[in-house]
Amino acid sequence: RLGGAAALRLLLAAHVVAAFEPITVGIAIGAASALTGYLSYKDLYCRFAECCRSERPLNASALKQDLEEKLFGQHLATEVILKALTGFKNNKNPKKPLTLSLHGWAGTGKNFVSQIVAENLHPKGLKSNFVHLFVSTLHFPHEQHIKLYQARNCYPDQLQRWIRGNVSACAGSVFIFDEMDKLHPGVIDAIKPFLDYYEQIDGVSYRKAIFIFLSNAGGDLITKTALDFWRAGRKREDIQLKDLEAVLSVGVFNNKHSGLWHSGLIDRNLIDYFIPFLPLEYRHVKMCVQAEMKARGSAVDEDVVTRVAEEMTFFPKDEKIYSDKGCKTVQSRLDFY
Ligand SMILES: *[C@@H]1O[C@H](CO)[C@@H](O)[C@H](O)[C@H]1NC(C)=O
Ligand SMILES: CC(=O)N[C@H]1CO[C@H](CO)[C@@H](O)[C@@H]1O
Image (cartoon, rainbow, N blue to C red; front, side):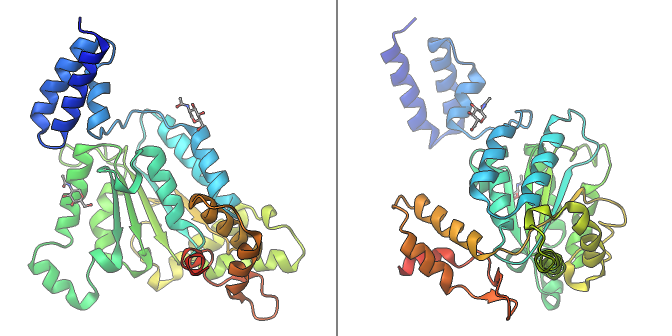
């Protein structure tokens, strides 16, 4: 048995090689782990290369802490996401992939939550090889371009091949579809089979995968409900899922621009959870500014916090309760100060 220093040298060598050549890494790491003797090959390998580890249990308290500390004003989303993910990850035998549909105005935290979820499932988050973000306006064509894309064979077959390839490589892959409301129905048709209750499709099981859809659809109805509560003098935190769930699925379903409209995702119950994001109030915007300052490593200057928050525009006209853009422009405004 070699001393610690020699083993360490081997490990470092493996690390350097890791950047260049996967097969050599395997051998070098194998040697190093034989020498160090206490780390399994897999553990060691996964220090250098990203491993999929679909079976790794979710750390529910870490997810809870992330959501509570970083996401502001979204008690419903926090609750539902925590419940949905722990339930799904604790289930050894899910009958279908987990599908979450996140709804609300821009800046309310939908993208942010997807990022938190991704990081809790795969430590590298959005940079992970097992997390895939599709932005409809970026990845998918406008209607008039569809022929062209079809000719180039990158739509929607390409998407199916990607999903298939990605899930084959990692059963616990996460797919995030942003701007669902701008997504062409054909794209949804292409992914629909993967969301269904099939045991396998062509030898691949999609049941451990997670699909997250983001859209603005239903944002106006969610806002209306929040406003009704406010006007009735009731607390925001008293809004319950049942106050919104019906509104949401009917509203979304009836909205031609929702991307989910007549896609069969709803009438076939392929969406497991509709998750509403409430419009953000002045106090939440302030929390966003404070959090952003902390994240940048600077002391929280309440003066600046107030100034940034007061620069946002609030609606409705008379009451001025909710921020137009949620927390969306906080970062750039903070840059300015
Ligand atoms: C889960 O997360 C908590 C909070 O971040 C941490 O203290 C704990 O060690 C984690 N547990 C495991 C098993 O990783
Ligand atoms: C193996 C495979 O098909 N991987 C695909 C996973 O998805 C990304 C897009 O996010 C494709 O670029 C990969 O080719």
